[in-house]
Image (cartoon, rainbow, N blue to C red; front, side, top):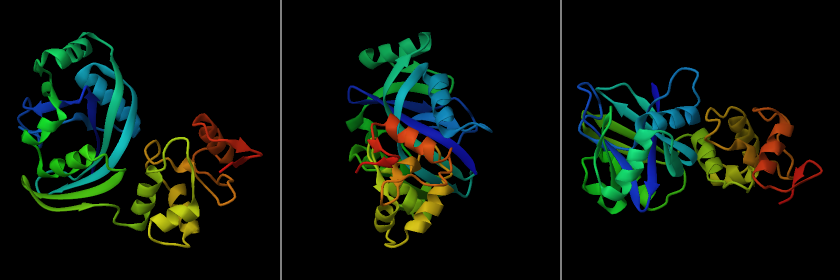
Length: 259
């Protein structure tokens, strides 16, 4: 299983798109996609995202928004778990990045080492040669869908099955947790209800304690019904959870969230 990132960089109603046409052996050859690539050993998903964008575009991301976790299963290529992002805040860090920014106004197509880069109006994206599964999630991005899990099954280039939404209890917990916005909190009980299992607050806590998507699924935004942090918060303990919440503007009094 390959882990990868894919980012759609947005400005002035356009996405920065990449036509993969340089490598002879490339599962994406001839397809238009966003910017991204494989996660390296010991690299976090956000680190992979920032590195891949900088290498391919010369842009440094200032912020980004996780949008989906997508499983690509193929009978020809290695299965892939792709972390989908969008980004609106970025800056050039070298001459290549400045060329990419200049192309936003000129409409010029740039020839990068992975393929051709071009800013495409969002309403024109569907006219490009895309993977069929990409058409599904690109439409969801256009509709401003909340964070979602997706599974895509391919035979060759043909999409034979697709599923949107968490398929296991843990995936539904992570999906609902990811939808809690910055500066807000939810409770284990509320997440259990939204995940379709009222009364399963303890199971929600166990799932979040095992959260394999640190930096993507904001488990620090989930507290108990009294507003207290998790006594065994798995990413630094309860004080670290409160610290993360304070940094996002959540009001904390006497060690508890003020709802």
